[in-house]
Structures are given as structure tokens and as C-alpha cells.
Image (cartoon, rainbow, N blue to C red; front, side):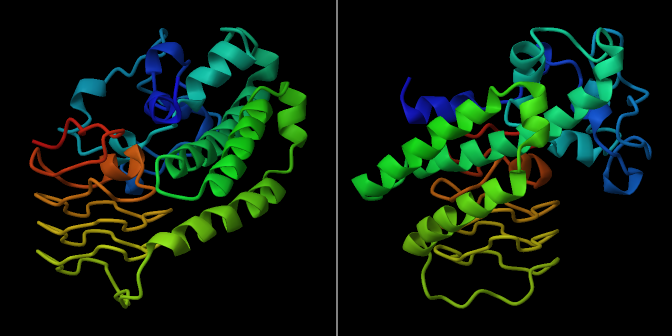
Length: 265
């Protein structure tokens, strides 16, 4: 499997998971979840077989938090590989441990997603070899035993990865001035190519018919941003979760490793 194919494999597969995102995470009704709930508390809509009771109604109920969430495949890795198919219901004394491991592995999978995307870009062979080494290291860490993962210093690890990603971003961004505010602003038809939108709040911004060649979306908040008819084909570090959280249509062009959300008509 090449790295482009591996990037395509980093997808959520709920049928191989045990509803970890529906239990391990804190929910807020204000953020588009069914109701407020504490981390470690199962969602009321989680069935005995770990399916969602209202999955087909998420759009009608405007549950944007549920629609937007994507774990990059971390959930099925924790369930099937780390715990060998056992769930928190089977291992009740380890439930909190399982939830904590899931949150750590999710962040590791997110890093791997970004690293794999870097390998699809036009960068030097020296940089590619460095990225490949980091991916190998990431996979090794993801297969640690639970106690090793829980003691793993994730912050130190991210401090090592972030400069690498920033260096890659600097190669693709241009010198165009980045707007100071995006929240609910209208950018319809503008060429946003080469802008570094890392960590920007793009909530409810109108990007109808915009072009995003080499635009960097690392950590950007895209909730309710309108990408109708926009060209995101060459957008960088855009994730499925960001796409799921945004608005778009079937004329929106996406990178080939991302899927059209069911809400995009």
C-alpha cells in the first residue's frame, strides 16, 4: 500500500468500533449534540450493539456535533487492535482506561493523517524521508500497550511534530495578506489560494465559488462555513471532520481522499 492509499484508509468505521466517541467524549447541546453529557457517560442514543438509535435523523435534528465528528479510524484501532475486540462493557474495570487511550490514539491518528498528506505533496526527497520516519514512529506508538500510551508524553511529541508541519506550510503559503476576521464574513468568488488559515475561526463564513489551491486549513474551525461550488481540490490539511462541519454541495470540489458528507446535496 502506498502512502496515498494509506491516507484513504484513515476513515471512521463505526462497525468495527464500540461507540467510543459516544461515550468517552464530553458533549454539549450548544455544540450540536443531543444533550449535555459528561466524558465517560454513554450517550442516551447508543444501542446495545454500539449503533446510534437516531443516526438516520441526525440531519433532521440538526445535530451538527455528531455529523461533524471524525476520529480518523482511531476508534476501531483501539477496539480491534489494542483491546483485541473487547469493549468497555466487557472490561468494566478498565472502562476509564479505554476512554483515555482512545483520546490519546485519536490525537496520534490525526498527526499521522497530516504526515501522510505531506507525502502526497511536491517536497524534497530529504523531507519525504524525514516524514516517512515520523510515520513509522507514529505507527509504533499507536501499538503501544495501554499503560505505555497513558504514560506517553503527547505534548512533547506534538512539540516535535508541529515545527515539521509549519516548515511544510511555509513552502506552500504565499505572501497575500490574511483577512483579520472570517466569522460570518462574505468572501464569495474570491481566490483564497495560498492563504494560511491555520487555527482560524471560519465559522459561518461564505466561501461560495472560492478557490483554495494550497490553502492551509490546519486546525481551522469550519463549522457552518459555506463552500458551495468552491474548489478545495488542492486544499492542504483539510480533514473529513472539517468538511463534515461545513456546508457545501455536489458542485464543491474536494481532495480525492475526502468524502462528500450526506448533508451536501
